[in-house]
Amino acid sequence: MMQAITKNISWEFTDRKVTAWGGMRMFKEFLDRTEIRKVLGESCLPWPASNCGYSPVQVVESFWVSVWLGGVRFSHTAMVRFDDALKEIFGWKRMPCVSTYTRFFKKFTRGHVDNVFGKVNKWFFEQIPEKTITLDLDSSVLTRYGKQEGSLVGYNPHKPGRASHHPIMVFIADMRMVAHSWLRSGNTGSASGAVVFLSETMDILGKHRIGLLRADAGFFDGKFIDDLENKTLEYIIAAKMNSVIKNKIQAIKNWTKIDNGIECGEFEYQALSWQKPRRITAIRQLVEERPNACGKYLFDMHDYRYQAWVTNLRLPVPEVWRLYRQRADSENRIEELKHDFGLNGFCTKDFYATEAAFRCVMVAYNLVSLFRQAVLGLKIQPRLQTIRFQCFAIGSWIGKKYRQKVLKVSLAQKRRPWFEGLFVKIDDFSWATAFKT
Image (cartoon, rainbow, N blue to C red; front, side, top):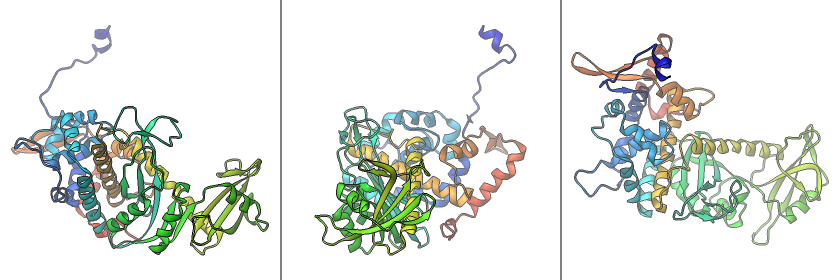
């Protein structure tokens, strides 16, 4: 039966170095322009004990490549190992096996993680011209299915009772990048350690001014809000709908209509642990007119859905609401990190090894984001899986021309000008022009 199906075309083996990822030649040149390898080499990465071991810079770079090509587990790094053409493109003489990656990340301690990725991230944002930025603080749940360190039972909306890790991340909304991240135990509260985390973030961002910080209700915490005000930062944080706040919202008499089925109001609120009252802004949406409205019902009344935020902005309530709604894009970033970059897949038994891989993925994400904005330059920025299909997945092979190695790229005639144009943009790349205001 097999012969009947395939008899129309014969097949044979070849020793030619062929790859499905010829477009990575372009991305390799982009990495060279950023000089990220030089920074990795100066970042005190853990070196192998043997003289025959792999360079840690190559281990990190090849790990990134496996992520960019769709790997979401350590076992998927094998697809890079057996691609001889890809090795030629990146100048690797030999490739690590799966266990080499896990052993490498297991060498990371708490100090290694902070020093290496703190230095890399700080260097990264130093290259970008000074900007006023908006930060979106968020946390997520990474469900685990084994007995890994820090994998504990905590808040897990999709898998209640299942052990997890509970990372905290802060995104730069204007750049669509990750400024800083921590991996935390699964039983950690959203705002746990947020004060120290924010201080580290500000150190990483250096010259950039934080114009606004937005966060969900998990960060509705008096100590964290006090710290924001001590740092003279403006903020909008979703309020926890406890019974006191619900009663105060219910007591609002002068709701102001801002659109069909949407009204706004505000009041002052002081929790028992707060040293002073703060401004709470509220929005209610009529469910009959807006059946897809976000928010919560008050007690047993289901005619309106309500949302509330604590803020030190003096803007009108509709403007506060409009600004906060833009924070929803951080959820898209988290979804892309999980599904396209394997954020929840690179897990080992050792906590700091898992965190090292976790933060390594974050740097890989920022490099792709830089590529999207500086080279592709599209209004609607594509996700990694789209970039992988359009730019990376191009059949190619290594040939020779005048005794020099040449990458033969198999690309339709009408797509070649576009592909060559990307190389021109990479050749003209500079950090100063990558983020035009």
